[in-house]
Length: 68
Image (cartoon, rainbow, N blue to C red; front, top):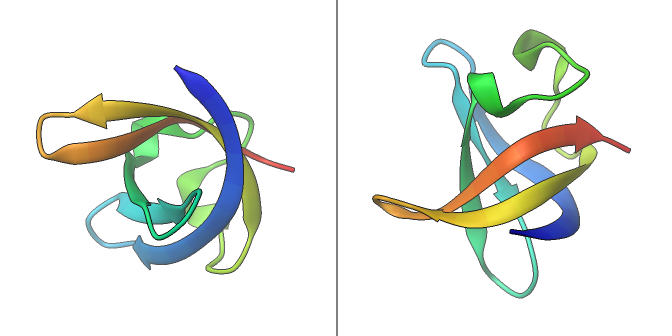
């Protein structure tokens, strides 16, 4: 997996997942279990994070989402 930086573009707090922008127009899905060093509820839209980009069953996925 490649490590990237991006910004949180959308959080679905009640459902425990969100999306991070990466290179270009790619949006990466992440689940609250992918958060590293932060609680999911403490994240905010627009916050800069680093993450490992990979491929999930439904498309691009972010793992090890960490605030920078």
